Every structure is written in structure tokens, then in C-alpha cells.
Image 1 (cartoon, helix red, strand yellow):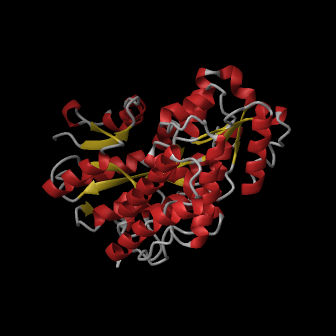
Image 2 (tube, rainbow, N blue to C red):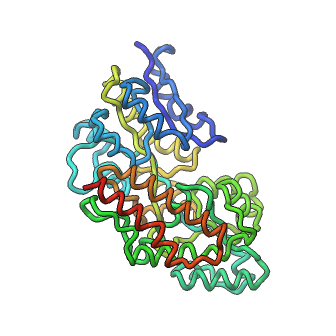
Length: 397
């Protein structure tokens, strides 16, 4: 039997070891020549790679796909749907968290084109001692837009020159934090039918204004921060708070255990962004039954626990989240709460396209503010967002 191929997405500094360990029980049942071959892709380029697979009808049998991109693939008629029986064999809808299942099967849809693999929630990580020294109450410091800005003012007054850290040069990183403010002000990304962009409407713009207004608490030299720069500022305690995921928290606790008593988590002022990855089977695959078995293995309770525990991703299975450390470790439990109270980027026809365009224009706004920090935010948001929303409206009709 020829090997089955699984494409996965990675950042430049990641390895495949955690996934290889989770696949070991599955591979142990197969002859060496038939074991799963991993096909790593870089997150920055993976959409183009997926499009190549789709156009040429060749490539991996199973692929990791960001949840908003699944429907973009589905409309190309290149995915093999999952049957209800196949889903039932891993516990059915009830096995998954609500937010994970919504990413796989949006309201009103009948065809299951993907199954959620792991979640990736965003929350505020902060240094508790820095807030306390500034006279800010950690219990309420981030509960509202006003309280957060007041806490930042107190931190700056205490001597923390730039208390906030964000990856302003990273498109998806910007999107994943900005939507919490957009939602928190009552805004929406898209209409319920997925045809009318709403991110340029007044409610959404009011939330984004508060989000970009926090730029005054970033480093003042005007340079945009990469993801690595933003995380380093926080881990080196040059900043008191940042938006991040569980992977960053685990990295700090592993590499700087002496800081563990000071690290804490809070939900952002609006609903947390809950991203994540799904698994799809390509229609062209010649290993259909093996592909289904591979997905079912990766979504089984043991593989979910082993892989997510080691990688720092969050499980999509309820039974896995009901185990330690997700129920008793404060940081892990904080991210579980972010899942429970958070929201996914809406999933609809061409949602991946909307995600890409919105991420791009939000990053452009940061770039403009880096060049012209005194820009009028109301005018800037209208000038950048409305044209993009208008073009998308024509595409989505």
C-alpha cells in the first residue's frame, strides 16, 4: 500500500516532532512504506499551495486548512465530504466544542467539508506584578475599553513607557486581535447571509477606532512590530500586556519558569477571537478509506490530548478539555474560557477571501499610522475600509 500524505502548516521555527509522536500509534499498525508522510507548508504561503493542489488535482490526501478557507475550497468542488456515519464514529457533533463545530458546519449548511482539528484562541496575557505596581487592579483591568485604556495610562505613568505589545506588521495577527474590539462595540464582519460586508459600518468602525487608539501605548519610534518583536517585548517584560495564544504562555513557562507567578490571563474587552485548523480530504485522493481513518485518528481522544498538550494548541474535543491541565491550570483554563466565550471568524462562501482582504487592510492602517501617528482615526478608517467593503460586496452577491 503506498503512503498517505498529510500537509500541515507551520511557522518557520516549528518542527513536526509533536505530530509525529501523535501519529506513532497509527503508523505502528502499518508497514513502513505505507506510513503517513508529512508535507509541511509555511503558514505565509499555504493558501497558494492549496490552490495549486486544487487546480492540478494532485498533492496530499489530507490537508490542514484554516477554518475560514474551507468554504473557498469547497466552492471549487475539490473536497471529499465527510459522511454523518464517519463523524458519528468519533463521537458526533456532541464530541466537539460549540465554537469548533461552528467552524466545520456553519448554520444552515448540510455538507460537512471539514472536521475541526484544534482551536487557537486569543486572550490578553499580562504581568500581574507590573499592573499591581502601577495601581491597576488585575481583576478588572481589561473588562472594558475604558478600563483597559485607564490601566494602560497607569502603567505608563508608573514608568512603563510602552505597556502594550501587538504584532502590527503581521496581517493575520492584527486581524486576530482587532476583531475582538470590532465585536465588542457591537460590530460584525459580515451579514448573516454572508453577502454584505459590515466591517466598515459605524459600529464596527467605532470598535476598531478603540483598537487602533491603543497604538499610543506601543513603542513610539514608529516602527511596525513583527510577531517575533512583539512577543519578545512582552517576554522581556518591556511591555506589560499583549494579545497572544497558549503557545506563547507555555513557551514562557518552559523557558522562564521563574516568571510563572507573575504571568496571568484576561479576556479582551470584546469576545475573544477563536481561530483554529480543520482537516479536509481532497477529492482526488486515491486513498479515501485510509484518509478517513487518518482524520479519525487525529480527532480521537488520545491523539487530541497528546498532540495538543505537546504543541500548545487547544483541543476541540470536550472530553479532552475536561482533563488536566485544562481544568486546573489557571493559564490553560483561561484559554478554555476564551473558547467558551469567544467567536470564530464567520464561515461562509468565500470567507477565506474576506479574511484575507480584511487582514490586509487592517495591516495597511497600522502602516499608515506608523508613518503619520497623528492621523484622524475616524477619517482613516473610513478611507481604508469602505472601498474594500464595496469591492467585496460586488464579489459576494
